[in-house]
Length: 376
Image (cartoon, rainbow, N blue to C red; front, side):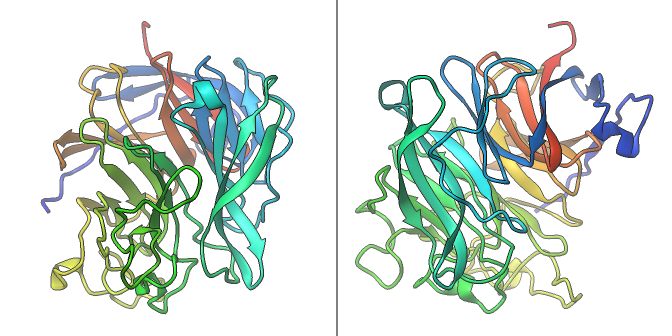
């Protein structure tokens, strides 16, 4: 892959560094124009994922275990009842939230989270019905459990993405396991699984009737914290955190092995080199990677004219980068990259029904920021 130099966006701020956590920027300058930034809601405890209801209200997860409703700017509900108990430790907790494609009729909400089980902790996914006054999830049921559960606080994934055919992708991590378990199809460590909305296994999954867990769609992943369906193709795209460098953007295909930990564009934390993916062509390679790391989390395809030229591009939330990365695309090929520095760890990004861009800042005192083109 040809490496494309990133165009770095400069914030026009009176104060920088730690003060930004209390005083978000008023505008950010992007290549195609300025974006006005406002805090839609603050004081969140590690916001991780969000989903818009059809009426424009926002469901947001807090890593510590609360699911909240954001009815309007500056407002947030009490924690909804009926949410499963989570293990809030390390990178685990209450993670992603997604609406059923037929939410208007069935009011079903899906969650992914870290769950305590015999043998340790692992990623799970479940669903419940949002009650009429949006104060609780009723009848919550677990529909998928990663196996095996193991000790340790790292690499849970996890994003939820509904495919056009109604199946559900659940992305996961390998639970910080370096012993080639991500290469073992008998478990779901380091796997992306594809299930039906009720948790049953689609008959056309790649390993149904073969060696391997029938829920697996692709494997050989490290820690997949971003997932979105490309509206132009219907394909799943994912962002994956590498070790020291080697963060990846992937299009996981049916049955593909993405090579971790046998190959990577990065190096181990110990400094030990990892063979480059080009040395093992039997593994599926990323369509783009980053060295040094940007630590990508949530991703979103731009479906609105937020700024000129943005429609059809891909946005990635950067944790260690502290901003957004925008990729211009030509089909499945990245043709340019733009970086927008917020000075804060960004956990997730989504496009609102109002045409605005919403981003979640990470950690204690996290915020949902709303971005619109200056002059709109």
